[in-house]
Image 1 (cartoon, rainbow, N blue to C red):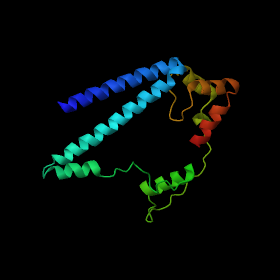
Image 2: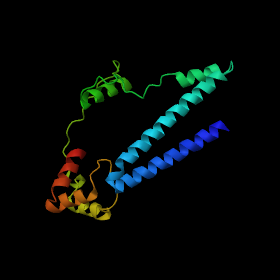
Image 3: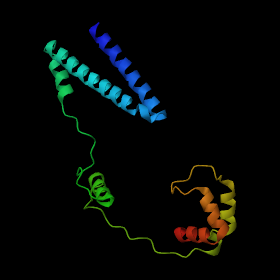
Image 4: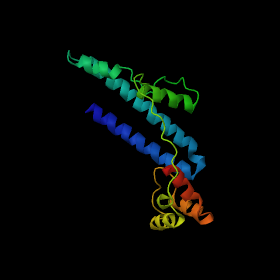
Length: 172
């Protein structure tokens, strides 16, 4: 019964605080009132937690030791390898890659394929690119490169040789 009274009091304080916060957004003169209600709400929540913990410990049985241990155990946030030692994004990236994909000493290095000139019949031309871009919508989600189709269409409109050269170079 006592817990429901505490719960309803905290619920009412939360409602009062959120209502005051909304009013303070509209009328900045009410900001101080909202801050006071927030402080009251947070202090009551803190007191309720302390009271609940005290009650739990007073009524704890032998099997509750594990539960108490779980409550008191320090919880660490999810951290990447190396913690906060990274000063740049590139060092963080390198650390993550080394952690999840360690170097394999038995790996045989593959030679890159030789550059082969495409035959004329195998090359992509501007009309093929135009046909493909016409089928795509400017409003659809971008592909894996995160470049919207409208940008590709704009590039192709300005210079219709750019995209075919890119594609042909990749195919080579």
